[in-house]
Structure formats: C-alpha cells, structure tokens
Length: 196
Image (cartoon, rainbow, N blue to C red; front, side, top):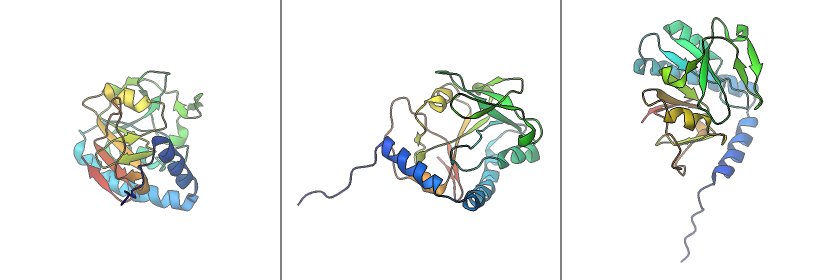
C-alpha cells in the first residue's frame, strides 16, 4: 500500500497561504484578534526587566496589528522602539516618544514605515524584540518574508528575548529549519502565550 501522506508545504506555499488568509480578515476581525493578543502580551512582563527596551514593528502587510504595544510599554514603564532597516545588516531601533500616531515616520524602500527619532540603538540593546512571522512552529522556528532581517538581527542578540507576534492560524506543526534560521523564545497569538 502506498503512503498517502501529503508532503509538508514549502516556505513559498506557506507564504502564499498565510498572506491570503491574513488578507481575508476583516478590519473588525483584525482588531478583535489584536485585543486578544494584548491580553496575552501582559504575560511577557514577567520575563522582562523593569524599564525594558522593547523593539517591535508596524503592522502594514496584513499582520496582527501592533498599535497597542506602545501603550503596553508606556503603562509598564518600558521604552518602545521601531526597527530601522539597512540592506544586508541587522536591524537597529529608534524610540517612540508619546503616541504612535505622533511619531515622525518615513517610508522605507520596502514599503514599511520607519521612525526618524533619535537616538538609534543597536539590536543588542533591546531586552525584547517582537517580530512578525508568516508562520512559526512550536519549536520557535519562524518563517518570515524572506529578507533575513530578523535572522541577522537575532544572530547578534543572544541576550534579547525573541518574540513572535501572530494570529493563531500562523502557528503550524513544523517548519523546515535552515542553518541561518534563528528561533524565537516566545510566541504570542490572539489565543496563546507559548514559551519554549
């Protein structure tokens, strides 16, 4: 008898499937999922030092919204930072002062918005970095958009807590791991808080 198991989806297949699934969500569904994830985010506080530097990204491509992370940081006495991208380099981070919608931003060539605030800090100065994923598995292996920015950054930040921020449907049973892939320590979704 032939083995009828389907092969695991390729990274390209996962990227197509997850982007399509994210795009199908309504604004209301995104908002509700973000509110639920914020309730999970509170658990992260137990793993952080007081006055932590927390890097995160601006959701702009259908990812789980990140707007509430600034308020979380401010209420807990942490400093929020957004990433600055430079080709083939690890990310650096610029601070957010006040409300997110009052932070001066510029559009990056890849379509993301980046802050123009100072001082810019190296990723190694972050206590936690909350990153986007296309998919993530239970061992913390993440599939990103393919640019390698977070893998390069995480390779140089051994003491930084690496956190995946995603919809629960983006958590998959397993992903192939490449030699350069850097796993996350924590997965926060709209339904779960997973610490590896």
